[in-house]
Length: 84
Image (cartoon, rainbow, N blue to C red; front, side):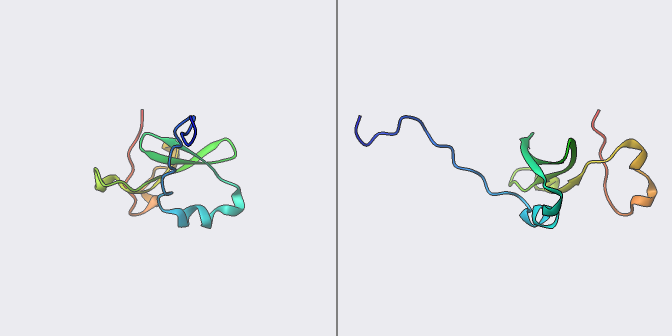
C-alpha cells in the first residue's frame, strides 16, 4: 500500500548514564540490552551494567561487574550483590 510502512521501526531508547561510555570510549566498549539494563562489554568480558528506569529507582546507577575475589572491604562504599 502506498504510504504504509512494510514493518514497524523500533525507537531506540536513550543510553542510561551515557557519560560512562564516553569515559571508557578508548576501550571500544560494546553494549547489549540485558534484564532491563544496558550491559557493557570490553573485549569478551562484561564490565558494567547501566540502569536508569522509573520503576525500582533504587536499582538505578552504574553496576560494576566483579568476581567474588574482587568483592572485598577494600572496595570502599560500594554495594555489591552476587548473582548466582
